[in-house]
Image (cartoon, rainbow, N blue to C red):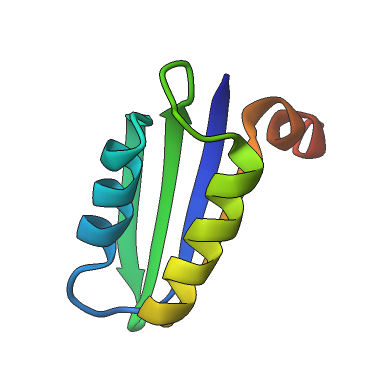
Length: 89
């Protein structure tokens, strides 16, 4: 299963490192990533692969939300199919 992870908030050092280290720890592969800083706001979007993950998406969502709070950013994790349906024209 693939998922979309978005991270938005004030820019600070270590955001990408913390999120990617968490994903690697749980065998969640990053297939694609883009990030930018817009007027001091950090914005990142990732497509990740859960096929070898040792956690369910719901637990990852909960834990990354908590990690995001500690970093001062908002983290969202959504199944790619749900994301695609929500953004289909």
